[in-house]
Length: 413
Image 1: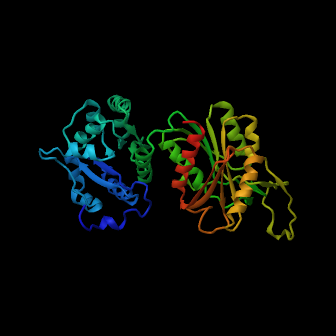
Image 2 (image 1 turned 90 degrees about the vertical axis):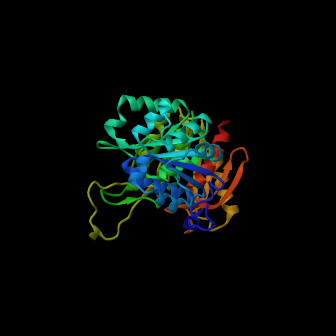
């Protein structure tokens, strides 16, 4: 790293999660090569040191100087006889290849080391160090038996594959944020939730007054999605049951079930628990607590004047699932205690006992800087066994990681 480099201005601006970690970014010659620059920058924003190795084909599509600007480190297209691949594989914590072309994947599966990317990656495989491969190519090529077999071989060698997004005739590179989170969890947690099956709820529900008006809340679903994504990238099997949310927030790489009303969310959760074996349920969703006693089949005329409405409670999902599920249940409690931590603790403890939770995550939604629709939160986690942890204001994806660490321990993993 140079004494000063522009990359230092973004270092750690997202989080310090990868501080002290060194990651090799392997870039092969696919049309999605330009996204690798964003991957490098996002890793640096999480405090990682990034070292780039490029195939000669990749260097024809994008200049190595751009990666040197992005990272502040020397970029390797050819090692020129020195043992740079050995030094990188021994001193760095993980390697990410994005985009990974069919050519690169086939070479790695066959042990061919004729580019700086494959040479370095084979060293990582030999050292049993974390290696993430992100394929990107034409769909027909991705589905070719040789590539399918090569990917299967690499998985057997302990390599993690982030599956591409299938759109039309293309197997596209996933979103940069997904690549970075996968790399981050691979470095920090590995596959520590492999073999665990988790059901997560997220987002609000809607209770309709008429075909166009409904009762809901301000939940964005971000916390539940963060937990589901973190669990998936730690290799848990994940199902996400979610209410109405922004399409861009909904992951495309594991099972999701979309619902609208609280009753639909309850039925979806119960159906999953009856028909599959789950180890844990994380109720991060915010289903409406009330619904209208009478629902109009047509839009109510706004000129009607005074309108008297009666609300009645909806079923409590947390109580109903205990009739069909005896595993670990994590509840959530959104309270308005205006900074009173002791009051938050008292309310959370009461709900923990009343609803039979094993763990509860409580937050103060009266604060405008955290909670609903925010990227940040500050939570209190209580356990039925007396466990207690307060997490100060931080990003929801980092809170999700800590919640799953606690879930893992509670499951005896």
